[in-house]
Length: 167
Image (tube, rainbow, N blue to C red; front, side):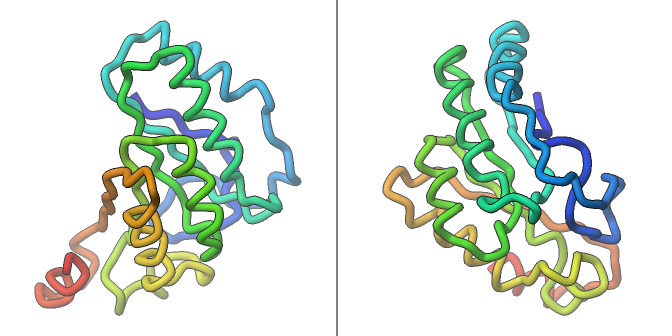
């Protein structure tokens, strides 16, 4: 099961995404971590993904909220594997640590496309190297969650660019 947290308005404007872009005005549902954990407990899945919209409008970009969602799931459903699919936190690696401190089994962040196509596909605030830094920071965290990333294909990238991105 996948849960998108922090609302349904993203502060970014990636061209591939159908999520509404805008300014959520700092609104955060304080009950969301408990509600997500309750849903996980009631559904009984083996694996859940907590994903997020980008929240550049928040001082911590939503990292503490994602971390609290993970902790709430752990309290209600301790045997469930939890993946956190996070944004790039504008390159603030301390916020990657904050999420990793909550103990996700997997920390995911999508590079979305090959390096040469970033400007065509992603929001101007997203950068390939910034995305790699998020993954590297998670990999080096003391709790060492698995890390993963995804990218879309069929946008005009070359095979050698795909192989380079995967490397």
